[in-house]
Length: 315
Image (cartoon, rainbow, N blue to C red):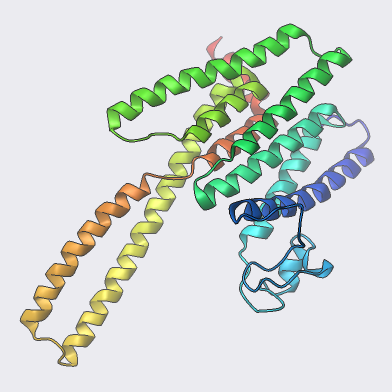
């Protein structure tokens, strides 16, 4: 905490939290519209199911979702919990940034970067896409900050070159690793958007903390893949049980003879095996952008202490 006065600290964090809620709501809208070919600058917010324009009472972050019973007031369609979850995540990240960096230019920079991370996480989850526009925006934000810091004398040209070298160095190293992995596994191991995001992380954090981003993102990705695999397996087992129940009911009703039912079961088993094989391939394809974004947020808030602690262990 960079505030000597607890009242000021509380005030700044409350303002940051409210700003985070509003920003999270806007990023939700922006991400959805960008994937559906709509401009975020034209047209009022509307229900994604019935298209009805939303009023002011429908646009209050989190509260509107709870007050409406988690559904659209106009058509009754359920509204995903992802919307308030995104708003709360953005709120928490903004409060953390304000608490760590205080009233500074760096706070503004990192809040903008966090908004970009949230946006690309949503688009990657929905469409396996990290938009180039989002990457460019993050780079522009960083460039403006570095220029302003140099102008104010809080950073020199050597530090700017360090961050540039870190971004290009990390990016180039990962490109080599990915090319080797692609050749070894015979398939794409990482998307180009992920590589660009690592490059941006190098620009923001320097090579040491960016290595921490790489490690954490891989750990987060493994956890996400494991959870997704477990969920897919449970869904497959549930569908198999339902299919077995339908077969038993058909046999009892006299629809098929036992021999015919056994033959059908063999065919379905072969089909299921083929489907499981296809699903196992799909399981390996996960949106990795959110894992990188989460790692960036961790490093943003605690990267320095973590790296210092690790280096102290080595020394």
